[in-house]
Amino acid sequence: MFGDKTSKFVVLGGLLIILVGSFAPNWIVNQFMFGFSRALAILGLMVLWRTGLVSFGHAFYFGLGAYAVAIFDIKFGVTDVFLRLLAGAFVAGLAGYLLGFIMRNYRDIFFAMLNTAISMVLFGIVVKTEALGSTDGFAISMSTIFGMSPESKYPLFVIITLVGILAALIVNFYLKSTYGRLTTAIRDNEIRVEYLGFSVAHAIHLKYTISTILAGGAGALMAMSLGQVDPESMINWTVSGELVFVTILSGPGNVLAPFIGSLVFEVLRTYAFELAPQAWQLIMGATFLTIIFFLPGGIWSLLEKFGGKKNGK
Amino acid sequence: MGNSAPILEVRDLLKTFGAVVAAKDINVDIFEGEVVGIIGANGAGKTCFVNMVTGYLAPTEGSIKYSGKELIGLETRKITHAGISRSFQVSQVFHSMTVSENLMIAIAIINNQGLDALRLMDTPEVRSQLDDILSRYKLDIHRDSTVSSLAQGVRKLLDIAMAVVSRPRILLLDEPTSGISVEEKFDFMDIVMGALRDDGVTVLFVEHDMEIVARYVGRVLAFYQGEIIADMPPKKALADKKVQEFVIGKEHHKQKK
Image 1 (cartoon, one colour):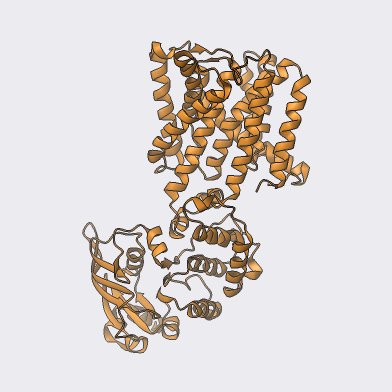
Image 2 (cartoon, rainbow over the protein chains, first blue to last red):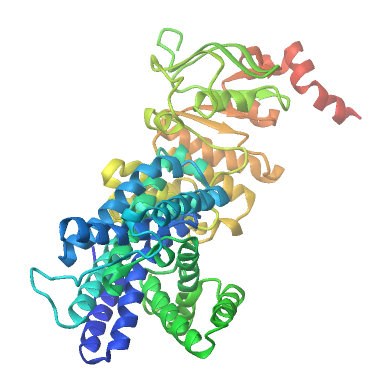
């Protein structure tokens, strides 16, 4: 079930990163935490992309996950990292499941923009509501692990990496199941899938819900990593665009791709900002163009090329 | 045949698109094991009939009963589960995948409904069904070819093979030989009809080619302007005046010119 090359790579690679993180400087641990948190959302977008669907509004679920952590912290004093993660994934997943009844009926640009629309509604509500922190957002207390308050960020980094490993294994298994293999089939020909006796709407609904659970989990982990939430960096449409950017940068070839792509993005953005504080977007834009023109399969396709597909699919 | 109950019972079927009448007064009984040819000029209502039987189009009025159960109102996938399947005039397959992947997905979908769809797709059981269907439809040599690289005839064969994975009792073929060269069409139909005969499937196929109709069907339904104008054995139908005038007359006329 999990004995394929990709699964082994996910587990070994993850454990290696955890080991390296134990003696790596703080700024590297931070990069990994932000990168891997976001990678969960990218994993979900990858599932949708393989079905031919691109959401330009997943910051809605990312933001819901992040704000769930903040609200549960402020209202109920929830500080446990696992409860926070579950709260974020659950709130976003529930919203995704309910909105999925609408989303599953739309394709192409309508699907993309409908998602943007709902994310902008949430953005507007949060920005205008004092009780939700308005434009300033909230600071989040340090996460605890089984009642203990860690002294460094390393334990949170370990948990984020372990969650990443688990999510990658589950999605990898899902993609090999009948449901998962339907992703490309639906992209190719919905009529045939229906005539084979499978509901395309149900299949898309499931994929959409999975992607929203992952985006919510990503938002929760990001909120815990940053120690704060605010609408501009969690819910705004630019965040949705950033998620799509990283998805394309990563490529849809393998569940490892979102983790690598997200990390590359994090490093790239940090250095672009350092190099050209006023024009860092120029560097990001140029990278994006390079990927689209020369690497339409994303960074993963480059690794496949040099690795001779050793990593397996 | 006459004593047994029909497997498909169509009564007073009507389909209109605004002022356009696509099907009218369609009354027909199909019996188990029959091979029925549906003929008619373009726009006569043949594909519309196939679409209504398979749930792709909802009739305006009328009833379609399969083994006594009403089909109208059921979605296409429910009709597939009930035992009616179809192929398409333009093959509806997964173009970016190989022939094997196409059929494996079809087999896995049929085998794994509901939560079972979370099971792995590529299993020894699926592989063995795949080998069987590849050999019966002579698709072995194309098994690892991507569909987009295949000739039209092979795509059509795959389209039909995909439709029979669900082991239907009734199969509707929409112009199976369109786009296939004259030299290949009989070989193609021999493969298809041979495999279907082995499975005892009731077949209804839409066809423009009268040679194919004469050779493979036991009964002809001739459509003209949404109505069935003849329901009789092929020899009689092809000699029928109305059929000659409204269905094949123009073709003959063109050939004479």
